[in-house]
Length: 100
Image: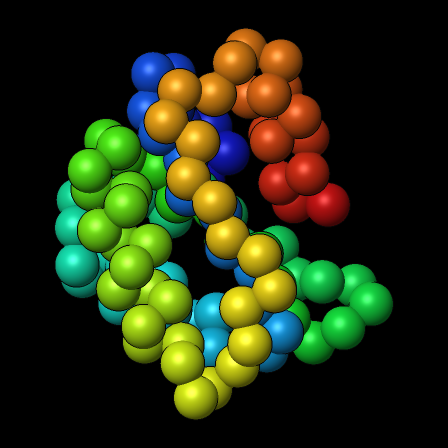
């Protein structure tokens, strides 16, 4: 997944406190809009994970809404955001955590 060029795409990031909730949420996100799941990174200190998805701003926003709605009742969202146009330095930082 890390080999894909996401230059110019928005990024949606959400973190849930349970891995099951993350998988249900990312499935809903992928079905709701034209996004690609960039990574799922397990939280080393807890059972949750951070999901990163890419696409147009509108698609990422729609996918984020669907993801968080699907996760309700399964886990707690600890953080979420959409970055419309990540800076090159931000892109480097995002890619550094993938696969770690």
